[in-house]
Length: 165
Image 1 (cartoon, one colour):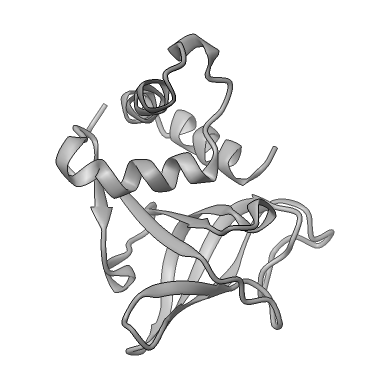
Image 2 (spheres, one colour):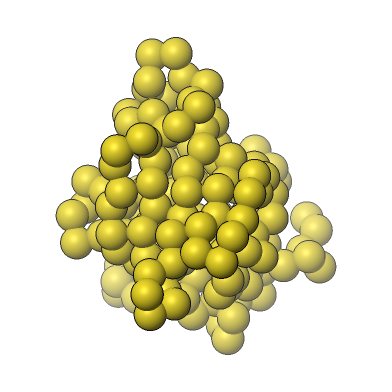
C-alpha cells in the first residue's frame, strides 16, 4: 500500500464512501475514462480535486491556509519529481509560527518522518512534518526528515462539517 491508497482506505473505513466516490467521479471526468476503470486515486489527483473543491464539491472544501488544518484533513504534496508526491492525514498541529507549521500526521510511506512510530521505517504509522512558507507567502515546502525538504505544491482538503453518512 502507498500513501494515496492509504488515504482511500482511511476514507472507506471512516464510512465516507460518497466523498471518495465524488473524487473518483472527478478523476473519471477529468481524465475521460470510465469510473469502473479507475483502480486508484493518486496524490496528484487529490491535489487537483482539492483545488476545485470549493466551487464544485458537495462533500469537500479546500483549505487555503495550513494554519487552519484540523485532525482528519488531507495534505497532498505534489512535485515535478513523482517520487516526492505524498498524501498525508493530519493528526494534530504541534506548533506554528508565521512561516512554519509543525504537524503530526499519519500515512503510509517508505520514508519515515521525524519522531516516526514505524520501527522499520516502512508502512502505516505516524510522524512529524514541518510545512514552510516561502518569501512570496506560498506554502511550497515540507520537511519529512531531518535533512529532506522537497519543494512543490501543497494542497489541503477537508470533509465538509455537514457531511454525515
